[in-house]
Structure formats: C-alpha cells, structure tokens
Image (cartoon, rainbow over all chains, first blue to last red; front, side, top):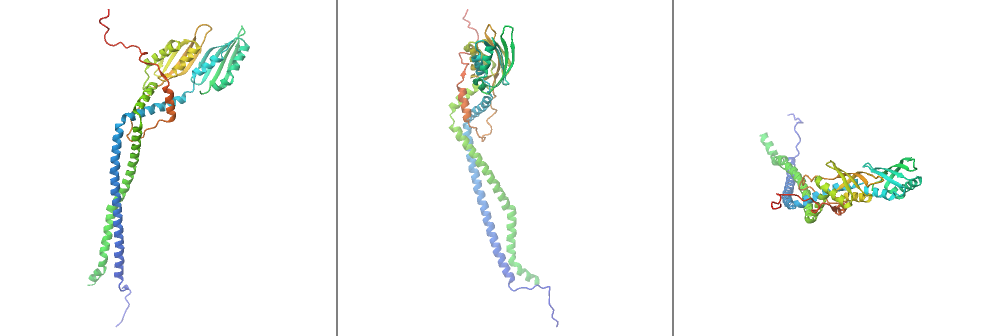
Length: 181
Length: 219
C-alpha cells in the first residue's frame, strides 16, 4: 500500500486548544475585571458629580434669594456707580477754568492798559481786545502777559494787531491758546 | 462525526467570545454615553461653581454696604446729575446765584435742552464770583463760552453760554449673577469734591406754589 503525505492537513500540536482556551479565559477575565472597574469608577464619579451638582444648585438658589432681598442696595450701588463713572468723564473734560482765566486778566489790566473785550471760546482759544494809553503802557501790559504765570496758563500768545490812534493811544488784539487747568 | 468533534474542540472559546461581545455592546451603548455625560456634567458643575462664587462674592459685597450711606450718596449725585434737566429749577438756581453774587441778569435764553445763554451785568469780580458759583453748584453746569466786554462808562457786560448735564437712570439691574462694579478711589475722590458743592435750591428759595381755592374769608 502506498503511503502519501497530506499537505492540507495542518499539524496539530498535542494540547494546543487547551492552552489557547486557558489564555482566552485569563484574558477574558482580565478584560471583564477591567471593564467592571471602569464602569464602577465612571458610575461612582457620575453619582458624586450629580450630588455635587444638586448641592451647588441648592446653594445658588439660596444666594439668589439672599441677593433678591438686597435688591435695593444693589440698585443704589448701580446708580451710584453709573453716575460716578459719567462724572469721571466730565471731570476729565474739565479743561477750562473760566474764573481763573478772567481773574488773570483782572490782575494784569493795569493803569494805562484797559481790556475792553475778552472772548473765551470752547475750542480753547481766547481773543482779547484792549486799549493802551501809550506805547509804554502797552509794553508793560505785554510784559505781564508773557510772564511766567501766564506761561502756566497759556501755551501760545499771539499779538494779532496793534493800531496807533490819533491821540497816541494803541488799540491791540491778542489771541491766546490756553492750557488745561 | 467530525463536526461534533470540532464543536467540542472549540466549546471552551464560546463563553469568552460571548462575554467579549456583551462587553463590546454594553461599552458602546451604555458605558461610552455615560462617560460623555459625566464629562458634560463635570463641565456644568465647574460653571455652576463659578456662578456660585460670583453670587457669594456679590452677596457678601451687598451685605457689607451701608444702605443709609448709599442713599445719601445717590441723593447727592442725583442732584448733581439729574435724570433730565429741570429747566425751571435751573433758571431759579441761576437767578439765586445772580442775586448772591450781586450781578444783574439781563436776559436768559434756553437754546436747547442742554444749553442756556445768559446776558449779565456787573463788576468784574462779581462776574467771576458768579461764574465760580455756577461751576460749583447743583445741578452740574459748565461754562462753555463767554464774552466779556466793558465800555468806558457803565458796568461790564458778559454773555455766558452754559452747558447743562443730565444722565438718564440705568435701564435695569442686569442678571442676578452679574458682578457689581466697585467704586474706585478716583470716583470716591470726585464724589468728595462734588459733595462740597452747595445746593442752591432749598425750600426757602423755591417759589411758593399756589394750590386750592383762594381764601374765601379774605376781602
């Protein structure tokens, strides 16, 4: 009888399925344990978060009711803050000090030099019209208006015109730009 | 016969495979959504904790405020910066200030809701005093423009343009958890300055209001 080799039939090591089954069982056991632990961890974390969520919400409601009782104070505080914030802006815009400017002209108008008109505009410029009795008075007036004190108030002083009258007096016009007070 | 033999050979693998399938499906349809839900909840709780912190801070801040002091301050500020300009009261204020300063008001013109023009006469010092009073009285006013002219004879004349300030009341309180702004030191300083301003209109200065019928017993 002829004996042949069956190449299609796999070689089976004796005891192999048993070994594989054991590995499978251990592996599965590990997976199940890991899965159970993960599930337990997720659930316990979820439960603790749910409790925390309820507790925080309870506290939020308590604080809200506490704040609702203090509504009057809150509205007063908002009103106070609104007005003060606006006043800060107004104060920062407070760049002109008309009484101070006029007081300065009152001080420097001396004998022989009279100021007939002072115009202070909102743009920050001043125009001054005046009459000086003679050149000496005019010179003294101009000296005063260019003094150190004036330098603190005005950033630019321009003598726009001087006209000599028949009687020897001088009409003068000045243009000044004032500094922020 | 061979089939039965194969079945018994792989029998040991069935249970693990079934377990794996069960784990796979419960993982997909149960554990995975729970994990996502937990993360969402964690995020939500973090947000709520933040809200609670804001509310606690706000409640503590409000508890610490002195209601009487707040009322006094807001009263002063409402006088300084009224919700809308009361032209009649402002005209009376200017009249009273004119009388106090010793100047004569020649004319008053209400240019708009927020601007008033004045024509006045008087000595220079008194005009300056009048201007100082305007800028340091309630309600807040500011001199925008002025022209001062003097002739050789007669008093000094001044045209003054005054700007009035007003501010509507806040629309509402906002949401309950919105934080309250604190008054800064600069704002407190401004309040201290404003509180020194003199209220011109007291009950004595206000014109008497005729009410009801005339006295029937007066002849």
